[in-house]
Structure formats: structure tokens, C-alpha cells
Length: 212
Image (cartoon, rainbow, N blue to C red; front, top):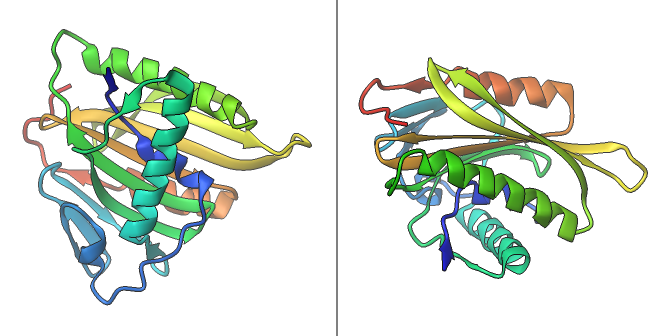
């Protein structure tokens, strides 16, 4: 059985991320368009401004992170994680601990609330995956409005062996236009937290078929 794969970008913390170093950052994304400091996804109807001085993450590094995350999840669940239909949207960073990544993939509900139920299962798997990696983490769930759209949220705080906080992550997800849309934000200091969350919360969404 193949596990539906939301939020694969979570596992970006397992590898070192580098900027794309490409003259055309549009070569580093699967869908949408980057013009100046503005990224727009036509499929999602989403626009976000990239913070000044932050770098686009290379396609190779994003794909490596997704592959590493999938392998970790498969080890925990004993099931194949299918990411073939997942698209990597915009990903930008200040450094390997402070970044935003986003993905989309088709998700057709076969029964009512399948998306929400699937997310809860994914959250449990993610926690178990952290545990299997010997990573001490606290997690919690919630909901948040972004441009008047409600997103499910999954918060993770990761600790060092001495109990110090080394990384915070927030995952946002919802169905938009028949797609499972996910955004992962990682930060380790208040300044970069504010920069990332402000960029995300200032996102704009076209009011089309925002079904959930």
C-alpha cells in the first residue's frame, strides 16, 4: 500500500541546504513563476514575496531532502511513500536552519474528511519518525487563517540532547483546487521567525475553488 504523502518537505532538517546559484531561479521550481522577489503559483492561486537577501533553494537539494524524508517514513511505517506526483514549489532560505518550503500534489477525497484524517495519520508518523531518529521533539496541532483561508497546522520543537531548543518547525496544509498544498517553515531565532511568518502570513490567494 502506498502512503499518501503530505509535507515531505519537513525532512529538510536532515540535510545541509545550499542556495541554487542559478541565474534563473525558475529552473529550481516545478510549478509557478518567480519574477523579481515575487513567486506566484497559478495552480494554487498563491502569491508570496521572498524576503530581501534570502536565497532560492536548489532543486537538487529539495529533491534530496524529500527522498531522505520518504526513506525515514518508510522505515517507520513499513510502507512505500509515493511522491511521484508531488511538485516542489518555492523554497527559500537564509541558512539551513531558517527557511520556507512548499509543495503541492493532487488529492481527491474518496470519502468525507479523508484529507483531515490522512493528515492526522501523517502527523503521528512524523512524530514516530523523529523518535526513530533519536530526535527529542514536542509536537502540537492547530489551525490558522492566512488571507482568510483556514490551514491545519503542525508545530514541532526539536531539542538537543541537553534539552536546549535547536529548531522550530511549523507545517501548514489544506486542500486548494484539488491539490494538497503544504508549507513548511523552519527557524531557530526570533528575527528569522518573524521574517518567515510575516512573509507567509502576508501571502495572497485568489478566491477561486478553495475547497476543503
